[in-house]
Length: 86
Image (cartoon, rainbow, N blue to C red):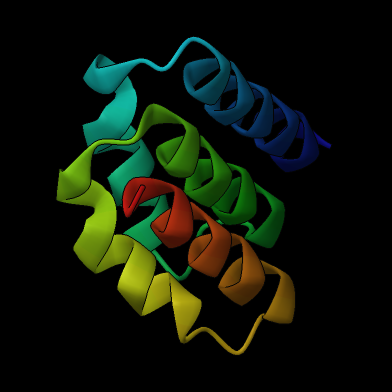
């Protein structure tokens, strides 16, 4: 049960960081995206948040995530990369 609670909090934190476009949150979001042991939903929200924030330092992590076997993560990473290219 505790792990599920943590996942909910981590996911909510990633969503919030993206919504407020927090550049200060980019290092933590990158850590989640780059950690393949992070829960899938948390990684997906971190990728989405990085796209909303728009920090170019996220490009390598997003490119890597776009090659993920998780089709949802891959699609979100691709969409985030497109946002960064505009």
